[in-house]
Image (cartoon, rainbow, N blue to C red; front, side, top):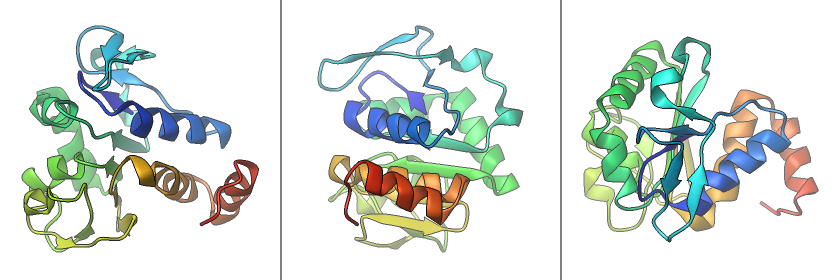
Length: 178
């Protein structure tokens, strides 16, 4: 999970929390050069790592939270975008929620894929078949609409990285009805 200044706190932390509950190793990675990253609503997150220290070869998926200006900052991070493009070529997991799917759209990664994003930002899903579903999973790319869809987004990531059974078990444990 990548943290830029101005990230949407709930989208990022809900996903991290649920992945860890599912026993999935997840690193909270700052792209700012500082492990303390202020979010878009005045909540500072303390990350596990700086992007410069990440071993991307061992990662199965890159996850981008939304928020403003966090989404714009993610798209401007050259090191992150190099990895996003590499993961796309290798068909390794890419996931983004809220405004962040537009990072994939602007990078040309959504051509012919079904994708969703925060309402009103659909024009930036360049090349995508725009969906209004809570979560879209097309090939190796998962997208979701916003804070209110953070739980189903996280559960889809759990399902992808483990199994449908593990995701269903977790949904029951957190009293989430899909």
